[in-house]
Image 1 (cartoon, helix red, strand yellow):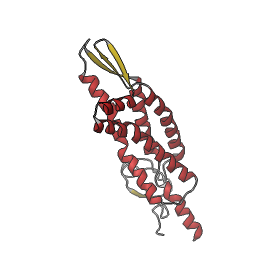
Image 2 (cartoon, one colour; image 1 turned 135 degrees about the horizontal axis):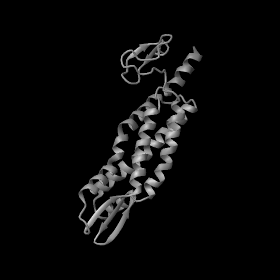
Image 3 (spheres, helix red, strand yellow; image 1 turned 90 degrees about the vertical axis):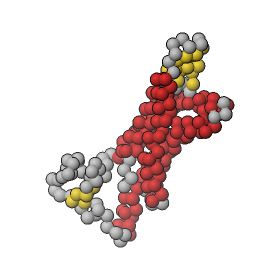
Image 4 (cartoon, one colour; image 1 turned 30 degrees about the horizontal axis):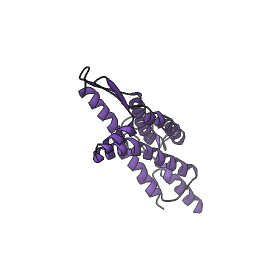
Length: 208
């Protein structure tokens, strides 16, 4: 197995990605000034904390109403799933599918993938490291699209404001849902995918 940059005494800056030679007393990147670390500090513990927080926030995000609609004196409160059901019943399957995937499936998928990656590292698994790295890249890419439901609520609140005839306001579920998306994005950022390969590298070193 080819030598890694860390084995050669090199460190990659997490901000500008400059490859720096590790030297005594040199703790900052010479190009951007960021602190240099071989791996993200406390990556596993910080990611676990954020994942658990996102799981807790995920419950009220789906239980509490995301919008309150007042029309002709009546008020209707809708959660994410009730909105999906409404679009299905009205025949708007594509819209219902988009909202379900972006607002329910994607956040839950990100949490499941992050948990599986964390457990695989802590169990020192050597299985399919390339596939696990690709999964991590996937959640990094799709994470921002989970905000679709919040964008829709924001547009509706801004556009539908007809006094006593109709009015739409954001519910508490929107706040929790936005928090879930942000926390999962931070969790993906704090996770260090290089840890996936460290176990494989250590096993190869022992076998040599």
